[in-house]
Length: 140
Length: 140
DNA sequence: TCGTTTTCTTGATCGATTCCAGATAACCTC
DNA sequence: GAGGTTATCTGGAATCGATCAAGAAAACGA
Image (tube, rainbow over all chains, first blue to last red):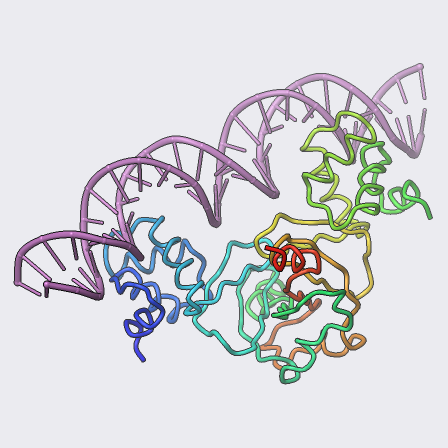
């Protein structure tokens, strides 16, 4: 199913901006709204910031994109949805890398005490220093 | 060790505002900066917003507080530091509840692929609906 | 008590995001 | 294809949480 069909299946209209957003997010590496906007403008000319935000929300609500918000950085988007994967975030540069779930799905979805909550998602973020920031640090 | 001694041990000066912040965060339940400011003012009269932010940063840097930032809500602070515990966040009201690490420390600190990163922390957030929001939902 | 240095005050500023009202364009129907 | 409905986009203002800056105040070692 191509992007246009996915949009239609989700009950959303197909516009150049949305196709460009899906493409940009797929090509990019966990882009934030600003980077998405710039990538989209490279593809289809002028698009308002508002349209980018609206579309990101619509696409996220429709399940075509996933929004992640590492502490201390603006929201980022990715196209890898529906599988239970997690993220590795660099404390220095903020780069985000996908990482498969540690042990299948088991540990992530089973809090030891649910305190009466109905839990629907477990989010795991590993914090550290990425290889390229480590290199920069040591050469200094 | 009382709060004043902890502050001194961390090389920080002891002020009424800081003692009040530590007390407020300990009493409260994962308060955000705004709530901390209000709780502090109840205790010691006028304190500027800036002083609250400065102090929260200083206390966090000193390891007396821990800062958590659930997606979509302002930063929150807690006094439970140094143990490997995680959080349960309500999607409806944003309430945060502490939860002990799922299986000791094992699953949290061992990403399946580190991609060259030096990992120093694993953060786990469980998302769901808290009991009181569930009750509100069903009565409607 | 004094002087140094941190901390606090007031007030401006910032980045990310959202709200609003009107114009535009996708898509369904004929 | 043409027209109407309604989602989407535009431009501009506004919000929120948080930070910066410069001077005043207060903590603490001597």
